[in-house]
Each structure stands twice: as C-alpha cells, then as structure tokens.
Length: 269
Image (cartoon, rainbow, N blue to C red; front, side):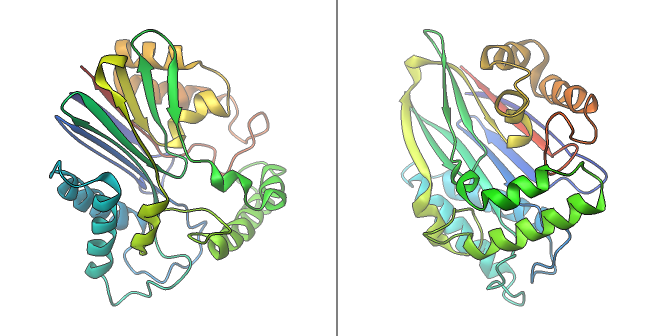
C-alpha cells in the first residue's frame, strides 16, 4: 500500500488533526473543538491527538490485534500519561478516529465519529464509511449556531452552548461516541473489511476535507479521487480552502468555523 498524506490547519490556532501512515496502515484523527471552554487537561487537544496517534500506530503494528482492541489499548495508554489531569471532566480532549489497515488481500477499516474512510471501487462507484450519530444530537442548538455568521459574538456564544450540551451526552448510550479517556468507546466504532481486488484506491480523511462533497456539495467523489491522483492530498486541501474563501462568514454554508483543520491520507495499490 502506497500512502501519501497532508494536513493543514484551518486558521491561526494549532492544527488539531493528526495523520500517520505506513506500508499497510493509514490513520487520521480529528480533535474535537473546545470552543474556548475548559477541558480539565493542561495539555490540550494537539498534545492529545499526537499521543493517541502514536500509540494507535504502535498498537496496530501487530496484525493479530483487531482495530477496536488496538484503539482501546491506545486510549488506556494515553490516559495513563496524564493522571494529574481531570480525565473525568466531560470536556477532556477527545477525537474522531478513522483507520485503514491492509492485511494481505483484505482491507480492514474502523471509523469512530465523522471522519470517513472512502473506497474508490475497482468497477466504478464509491463506498463511504462514516459515523454521523453526532448529527442526531441536539439539532435545535446546532441550528442556532448555523443561524449566525462565523466570527460574530452570537456565533461564538451559540457554539459554546452547543459544545457544553454535547459534552453531557458524549460517550453515552443516548449520545454519540468519540475517542476520549474511556476505552469502552472502541466498542462503538463502525468496523468492517473490503477485498483488495475490489478497490482501486482509498482515502482516509477528516471532515474538514469530506465536507467539500457532503456539506458544500461542490465536488463529487469521482472528482475528489481525480484531484488526489493529479494533485495529491495538498491539492485537494487547497481546493477546499479555495471553496471556503468564497464564503468566509458562512452565509452560503453555515458552519462552526470559516475553515476547519483538513487532513487526508490517500492510499493506492
């Protein structure tokens, strides 16, 4: 498996995405925004995703370990790194997870929350694996955020109300699941396999990239993979940025940020 990847922050703040790859593995993490609220952790989201990514890559290096077991192990190991922090805080740093691993002629995938794995099928068409349970939570507060232009006090206050409410249902049966401190989250992933012979290429990405198709509707998956083949991950991310630059305040495409962190790992055989 040939893996190339790139990641670009969405603004002046540190990039809270993380990406890693090897000849048989691609991992993308998307740290959840804190919206400027406290987390109980002195390290912050970039520290969390960097350590989770490293431990997840290490756990996945053993092909006999399943993807959920590897994620559970990584969550336990990262939690053990900062016991002085309040890991019971509902805002403790957390992330979405998307993994693709080649195992001989089989491709195993794991998705936790809305960072997708997308297969370009050998016979044409695409398969998108994503976990959108978060979209079913607190729709009224989501709509309130989207009613404001970005970079306005009303938008910031509405986003903080949404994040505070999301924290109360995060990693609960009545809410949605992300990678945080509880290894139980690894049991709530979407997992499965595809036959390598049925796949032309694949992309593992954060929603800062996939929204070009899913939210902005400014590209098809065919066009996404055509851009990846000709311009690579950086070219695709630049396409996202050029699109967002036409709507800097979120009037056409209401969103949480003018530009989100964007990451993609492109896998070919």
